[in-house]
Image (cartoon, rainbow, N blue to C red; front, side, top):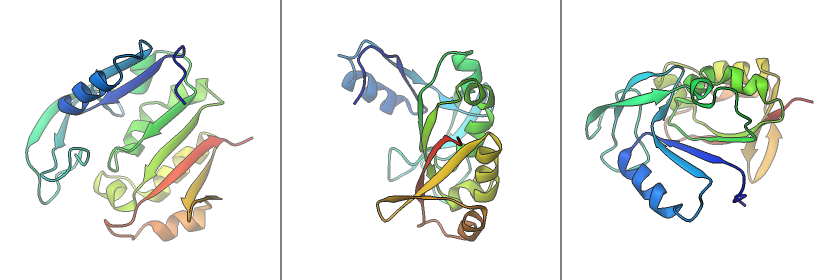
Length: 181
């Protein structure tokens, strides 16, 4: 449940989706919607829009796409500049590793932060990363990574992460990331 007092910030890379989010959340004065992508640094970023789904845009060039557009991207560290964060939710088509690189200071400065992230081996590979790299970065930042399997959270171990590497486009998961205490 969203607390109407605590700030809630949404960054969305597609203008139409940002407009819909603004309309949908208009009664919540604590929600800030931004038409920006999240990335490893604040810069211009190319994305390739999906012909089929308005939520399946990629930072890498897929075989089929509608159009290539340039948008503003921001690192979370630059955007938040030290503000408190309790929760992060990411589903950015394999670009999660890049986004994490742009929020290392935010994560270090918020040791109780929790996160839900898509964990898509194919997307991570296409975006220039890997399941193992993403898992290792999260654990190096002192986080425990749990994978959702059959409606249950299971601690993700390095061996399991490496077994997921070769999976194809149709295989994706969600992970829950929390402080390793």
